[in-house]
Image (tube, rainbow, N blue to C red; front, side):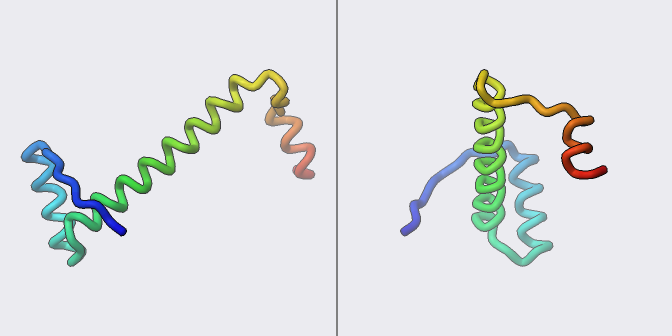
Length: 72
């Protein structure tokens, strides 16, 4: 199931999106969806990293220790 959303974009951003859509022969909605998926994935990764940083029980491994454990 999908939802329909309306968004407001700055003129320059809308032009750039239209150019990309024309060049790739994909819809603007396709590119917006892909960009939003990538953004949300990155945001989720950031949240995991921040949570791990706050976790006092999560060990910190130095670069030297990591290379040694990988046999480098």
